[in-house]
Amino acid sequence: MKEVEIGTKILTDNERRAVKNREYFQSMGVTVINLIGSPGSGKTTILERTFRDLADKVRFAVIEGDLETDHDAVILRKTGVPVEMINTHGACHLNAAQIMDAAEKLDLENTDILIIENIGNLVCPSSFELGEDFKLGVLSTPEGDEKPVKYPELFVRARAVLISKLELAELVRFDMEKAREGLHQCNPVVELFPMSAFTGEGWETWCDWIIGLAGPR
Amino acid sequence: MKEVEIGTKILTDNERRAVKNREYFQSMGVTVINLIGSPGSGKTTILERTFRDLADKVRFAVIEGDLETDHDAVILRKTGVPVEMINTHGACHLNAAQIMDAAEKLDLENTDILIIENIGNLVCPSSFELGEDFKLGVLSTPEGDEKPVKYPELFVRARAVLISKLELAELVRFDMEKAREGLHQCNPVVELFPMSAFTGEGWETWCDWIIGLAGPR
Image 1 (cartoon, each protein chain N blue to C red):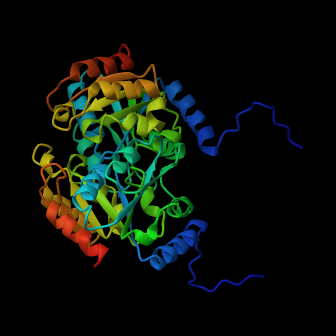
Image 2: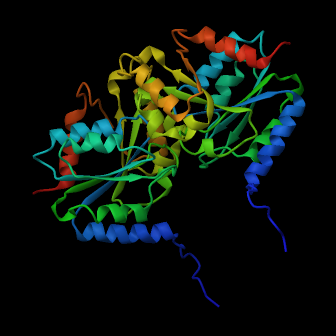
């Protein structure tokens, strides 16, 4: 008979793999970000501009998750950043085993920050640990200022949230204070970055934060 | 020993319940629509205006699915349409058992069209049959014209797709022809309704279609 100590958390297979991933990433000295948001919230556009603007400051690599197509991988490869692509063919989130397979193909010794762009989905991906250092959420203004309290799964777990498409905020009647309140209700210590990858509003603050994460070279 | 005829599809528990739901809905003479789209694609706003505009033409009822909060149910109840609410507390889709529990609380004998507003998610809800007559997809212009081919799960299964937030199309560089191509690549016979619940563009065509579904009174 097997005994299980009371209070012991039983890890799922995915969680065990995520722990191994995290150990591996730490041994390589790479910071790993799990980027999560709805379809069309702006994840790829934000990465594209970030990679171009910080090309001489941060050594990025990307694992790009999509249900189908290499659409986003093609866009990001044009920035010169190494991209490994995962097509899940119907699965609504990435898992830790997929991440390890992809990570082994990247040159992590020469990477400061590895970004995992998860499947566009505000619900499922946040429940699956990948071995990341932290989750970075994206909420775009057209989605609505009430979404944090309606879809809290991601926002309670994210270290920071990018409030994207700021250029549309007025047009779509997005109330920034209401969004902030909802986000802080989910997560009192979440860091917020209101931004627009098009107008550049809030962009420098975001870039400075990312540079800080990469650490000294 | 049990024998299973080769070629027989083994139904999941959810599918069995969905079949029962469909029989029940048909016996009540109600048309049932499973409304699916990303968070913030405009589902609730479209329903709100549709219910107001067609108040004297179609007898609607709604089952409103949300992870948390009664935010959308409160909005829709103000239109006078009966609303049953399901909070899934983390689950990324509605299931057939939840639908039957909710449907039994509605007066379906005096309902022409029952709309099930599913969890905001472009991936998971389309895999779970609820007993609906058909799936109605929503794709909002800020999500991007490439989303049909990147997230085909819903679009291959939908009878019709509302292309919402048409008033933002130009600003967000949404290419309608590219979107149409992608949608028809997923599903050659899908019906498309480009529309704006704010400017009213395309609205009459949508309303006429819904009135046609309700049939003669």
